[in-house]
Length: 277
Ligand code: ATR
Image (cartoon, rainbow, N blue to C red):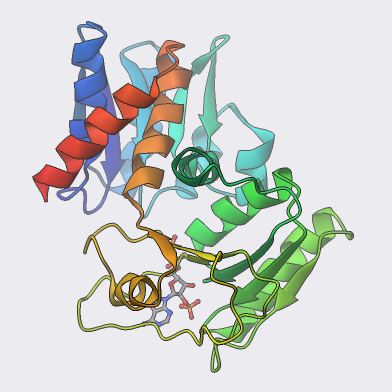
């Protein structure tokens, strides 16, 4: 039996490297492959999961939303996010989960012993990745979330979306034109794709920040975005998106195989990934 990561394009996915390492380590006798598919293939693939011909799927861009209509059930947090990245058979039903947010929070908890409770977070971006992370930040009971996005309307839409779920959540619009986090901000997260090209530099005014503030850029290629470089230069703790990538994969793996991965398992894979690009 096989597992797949499906999307379009899929060429650059690191997921096969990650999962095949753990599959071999735990002697599961399976294979995890990447498959570039068109939208029309989604129902057939879900059917194969239903029949047990496919053990599990990871869904990546651009199908994280499209897949939902073919599934029997999705988790509450996946419903919150409106996107799925993990599919498997659970009690004879094809079930969808989103492990991105948990992957993000776990990565920072482990790497920096960061406790999200009552923290103020400044989020750049209002796309799919942002919804996943914000949903989990809210679960962790952060104090306040600021949202800045190039397209202001999308930031407002995101704020209204989460406020409709819970009026007490403190979400505030921040200006994209002048990215200047206030002194209460503990953590800055770039969830946008701006910075993936080495020519792109996201500029954030750090004047008000305390030196304990942390920057996470969820981009992992390049390994060091210009934003990370600038923050490092100023002495801030920084992390790229590789830890989140591996942690979200670990959550998927745990769901498929009920195997809880150790920190050693995670670190070994991270090293292999780092050496692969
Ligand atoms: P994902 O699912 O990876 O989050 P997405 O839904 O397309 O992808 O969202 C991409 C995010 O990156 C958005 O916040 C987008 O801003 P807009 O809402 O204004 O499009 C942001 N983004 C992409 N390219 C950008 C650029 N050149 N400058 C600033 N923000 C950019």
